[in-house]
Image 1: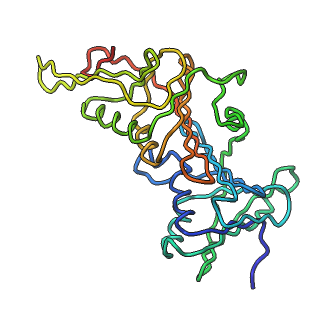
Image 2: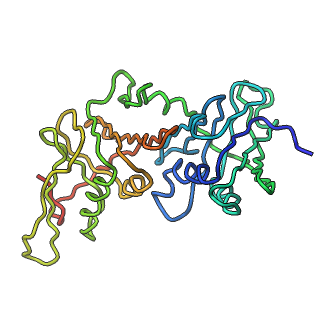
Image 3: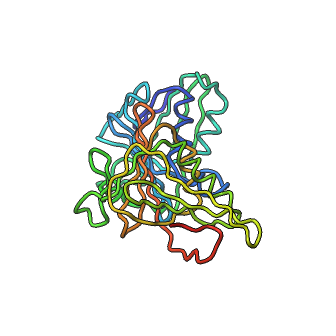
Length: 294
């Protein structure tokens, strides 16, 4: 006998796997696996956020067209704290082309006496088998996602920190070009950051891969892009940035305010979903290291 549930998402195993492997930046930051996510089920879309976005920030949406169906039994939305690793382990029992359903069962204690939306305490993965997956509970720090939502406009451009305007820099570039650029930087074993340099409407770089004292070999050039709009700037970003780009495909839109430094990455290459990541810049004094920039 089936238990009453708050919401359900129906789709193919391959699509659930693809989603769960991209909704958190944790896998890009380390080899520790996937961080927990805060998931919100709306009537026509799913939103996901990094649970504790002190350093990681992701905000992804998956519309009804990405799945085969979304159902809410009551209310306007349902929330859940989800450990992607637990759900992925259950999905691995099935073939990628298998059709499954995720059902969310209520945690009445979490929202009783409040105006908060219903929160699930149990996920059921239903296919040929039924998997019961407990949602993480206890002293969880759940950040209000509204602040991150509000930094993106309806067109998915990125607002400045005060929210008064869209940031001045917009770059549209193929993901593969960003990966290639980062692989060049990785050629220096002492490199600790990825610089992003915009000059005269182009991404510039000049790299000195010095292996021995006195070696004056260098590589320089400009990255092929679709669009580079905004003022010149130079900022540095953490090495896990490459892991984010490795999760993506097609073209990406990159937004930043040169003064704030925060980088927003938006990818809409797959139908029915928008992946958004926000990465802080790093203050670093490169000095006379082998990596030098014009």
